[in-house]
Image 1 (spheres, rainbow, N blue to C red):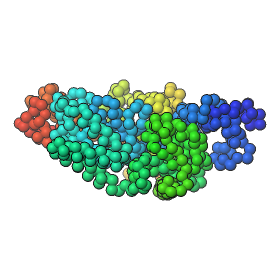
Image 2 (cartoon, rainbow, N blue to C red; image 1 turned 30 degrees about the vertical axis):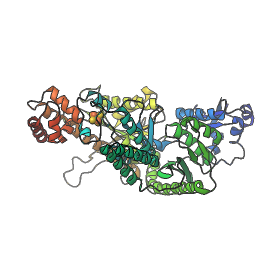
Image 3 (cartoon, rainbow, N blue to C red; image 1 turned 90 degrees about the vertical axis):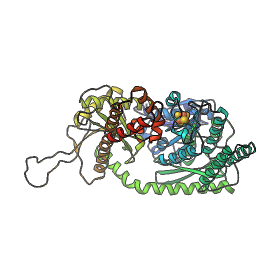
Image 4 (cartoon, helix red, strand yellow; image 1 turned 90 degrees about the horizontal axis):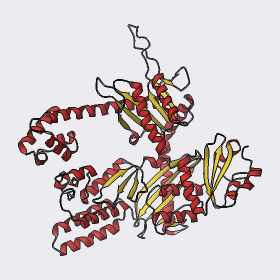
Length: 614
Ligand code: SF4
């Protein structure tokens, strides 16, 4: 029996907890939390000011409401977060964009910490910084840190196996703790300086470095004093573009919203020690979700996901369950957090700035999005897909003249390439030229992982016709995957091979759909044609580039193997020092000569041999 508000609402308890709305097929379509479950559910029925489009459709969609009781609203907030992650209900605000961001990670509890670049923060006790919008922003930050703070940048395996410090040591970017007797306290102090720097607590860091500089000078340790002076200069120059937005030396995240139609842009300004150190924007397509709920769900998901919680969170309107949210953020941070809606003063000005940022980001994003969105909508309609293909992955198997086969995956989000979602796969299980077997192996590996991480695309495109599509649908069946569309994209064919004159005629691109005999023929000059062919061409390009890289590296490897006088021990030493044969090739004569067991004569032989091979 479908949910009947007239009789069923009164059976819902008035306690705090979470409610799960289910459709007739059992799918959880929405998860919410409330201090009083019955009162909250009642708000969805009768006269409601809730303009979300699904609320208007509840009488058609809704089959059941399941409730889970908690002892208080804060527990409901934590549970809501878990339930949203588990069920990914289609009508909840999703932090989709956050998947594209990168973070920096330092685990300062281990010996000789280093900085790692990671996609998502984990609750593993390490410190995370970001999110960073682009790899180039991360690269700039890392460069600055490398140049002015001496932390190792080698991986743990290299670190454990070094017999002498690498180039980083020689150019004074690492004290060489891999083999040299480095003072642990000194290194730990550097790590803490880097943490302050990445947290944007620049004022505090400059003060600390100033003290260290004075102390070093007083001890006549002039080299150290000079290093601290250079660090202070570097920090100060990196600060110049950052605006001082208020006098108070506290950390704040400030939120602004901008809406138009069913689209919503959320901006977050990060203020650290009174300076604006960054801003992030997130776009949502959830129609009409009230601001209070957007803010509550977003903050809960964002900070529960491991992003650092500041001293204060400034919101444009009171969040749904703000008291519980405040408590939850305090728990996550381990210290008191203030969540408030300032009406005047510096706080209000920051809120206005956040709102302007949200509006600006909205128009920036939509201008180019509008055309692409149209293409995605048309693609959905033309191929009768279940989902709007926001995230598409395309798989291609390439076998190049007798070389090893390579599979590649490219990812498009919102109709544009997302390089972070590109992957190469070396085929592990299938031998020979069994295209289908390889496609099966790659899809199995990808989708099994996707299932475990709840990270699946909206549409999978396999390069090929019915055969490849058959492999993909069999993998879907074996893994029990539903809710992800899959199609096969076959290249156009020459249709008038017999013609002797005139331009060659080609058929249009053909898209094979599961369970449909005849392929859909895409018209050139349409958005959908453009998106799919761009995707497929990108997959080919990516496969070829990778293949060349592998081939070049194999060629260099065999060139290195063939150099007289370079036996296994020296080869190992070279690879350890430079990471790869390409690294050995790029190394200077001096650096080569410096490697254990080498010397200038052999270094010259290696250099000549690799240059001739490459
Ligand atoms: S291998 Fe290089 S980067 Fe790593 S600790 Fe040694 S000197 Fe530093």
